[in-house]
Image 1 (tube, one colour):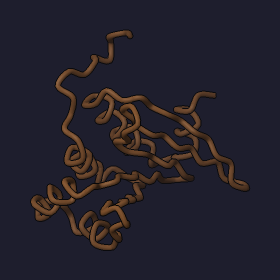
Image 2: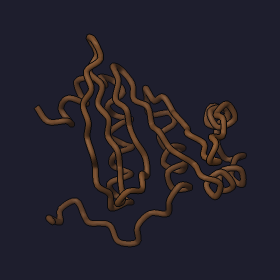
Image 3: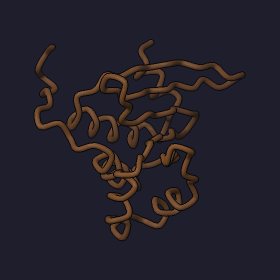
Length: 143
């Protein structure tokens, strides 16, 4: 069974939100996708990281019925977020407000996603982290 099939089985109704977020990332960025599987007792957890060399764009932790999007915002991304803060929902702002700044001035943001209501905002947060690539391979192009 592929990782995508496992993700679909684990996520259930949250799979549509996951699929929309993946479609956005894959259509705007050229990234390596690194999967890792973890078994914790009775639950399977899948981790998907989007990497460009050693730099991480985002990570997704797939859990039963939902997934967690992990973004690390450095100082420049934090400033860009604050400049556009008024355009984000209270839930997104609350996650940012309740996240401590680490010893290296990074904010490790974790967004729990169980439906499609916040996917557009999460895509905007990813764009704040990194501008989309100017040239992205078409889905029909083979490498």
